[in-house]
Length: 416
Image (tube, rainbow, N blue to C red):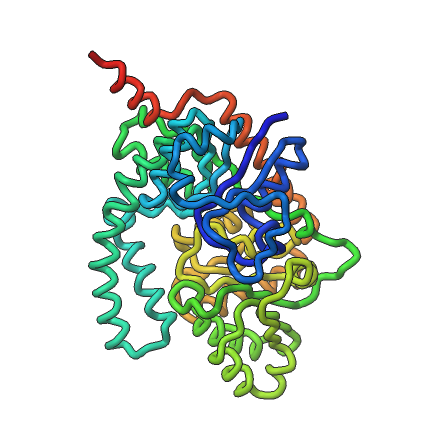
């Protein structure tokens, strides 16, 4: 067994939530496999974060960017939850230069505007402005501004600099098939067919608590989970419009909404007719075991998002035998992945009616017995089990040569 640490150059709140997901869950999985493991977190703890855990190692950004600091840890490898951001390139460069094998687990759909998917990028921006609920004029002006400013940033950040960042990794893993293909296309653009980035599909890891429970009967119930204060991505305005309409269409349907409670959500719920108030429930932020229990009862998860990389709640639902509904777009790669496997119903257009029609279609499939919670869960649990994903990563890392960026630097030092 070895010494593998995890790292995520981001701030996190709360131990329970941290070790339930992301690099914290990888840390627990490595320990279960018999490895020595800690989760490296950047900066001082956030309020409410319990620092008593021996599995947390705090570091400054200066330390994370130090080759000597990484060498002092004497690790067999690092798994880094990442977005391949240019600001984090000094960290991956330090890890690679220290001689420590690095698995870069990419949280991203692989979009690369304006090099690829230009039309889809603009559609995604417009969907985000729709989520703000502002008037057409304000939305149009904001859309034009974001199209120019974000496009310029993405031209660099999600193109060559992203490719250069990934070249420091021993292995780069992606969460969904379409994300893998998009990243491969980007690497081929800058590096050709022999681009040197060691890309693999690993999937997205989910806690074992999220599984189908045969003792809990599925109900005619939809679940929606999100950071509803994020109007452009999660789009609570779309959620509210769709939920009200589908609940009116199905008088025996219940809808459970989890996540940040906003004033807009509370006001909307209070204004609903009494019958809908009794069947649409706002639960706010809840711990993982409560979410798992709700998913084990639900038939469908609904995501009104304009874009997502790897929404964990969607995969948690699939492992509990829940089908999903979302927009048909490459900027929702896991939603498309679920649909391609026969476990999702996609809305063809970003319109309230299209989402209602997709939910109605999914509910009728459940009524006709076309969906099996047992089969859905058994299909997705192996694809999301943390030990299985870690095996893909560790096997790939042990068989891979040093990353190309490190080889290039070594050649430069030895050149006459």
